[in-house]
Length: 335
Image 1 (tube, rainbow, N blue to C red):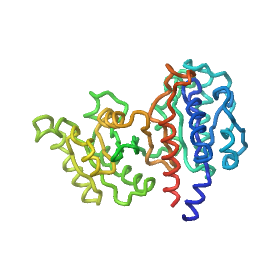
Image 2 (cartoon, helix red, strand yellow; image 1 turned 180 degrees about the vertical axis):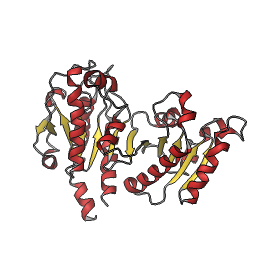
Image 3 (tube, helix red, strand yellow; image 1 turned 120 degrees about the vertical axis):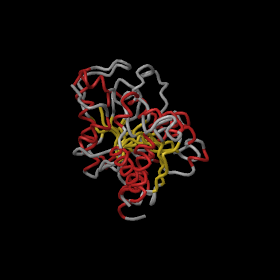
């Protein structure tokens, strides 16, 4: 192991608390019970928001987590103004939720943590309570990173073969996709994805598959013209630059096991084209990864789940997968 990778292995993953009225605190406590010292992480938030009975140790700096991870959940305390009522977000806590994200980023960027894993937030609650101006976590993290150009990747590493998908357009109406899905955006998405796979997943020559926008990838113009009008030429240009990219391919035949074995990531035109296969293959264990940031960030592939918060029913599988992937990516980036 190189000195850099050994150093990464001795720095904990930093977990931002997310919305304390959601399932974030519960799944963090459950993840620690399962992982313990096997994968040390530090939870940043208000200790009073963790489930009653959670064994915790308040620490002053992340390095202490490596000493106490097996005996108690290491917590970097961050005061919140209000209690956390399960399923009932309090606008008074919105500013503190945002502060924790920024603090966690600062810790990782300072080299005190190997990677960042973010627990779910609720954008409307943050907007209502603190005028949060960003569509979501990803955009806010890009802002904190100085306006970095990023892409969202969802990964199901437990699938056989694994599946990684990148939606080129994300949280917009389907009717807006054809206008937003441009040659420039597709080129940028391919470049960021390829670089992210090289840097964070140690894949030297990433193989990418690009889905067509239309059914059957347009079927020669019979079902749409974007593939003929610009996608073929755009992908040919990327191949000329040295990217190993196939497509445009019919999306309905890209996600069975035999097809997945031929690529490292699938680039999709819009949200559901990417997320339906990932959630079908591994609904509980999928991980959200942000590629293009100057630090590693993962998150569970689910939301705050207000409907089951505080009931002890939340499944920590996605958070555990996100923590494991964050640690692995942090080590890959440090190599």
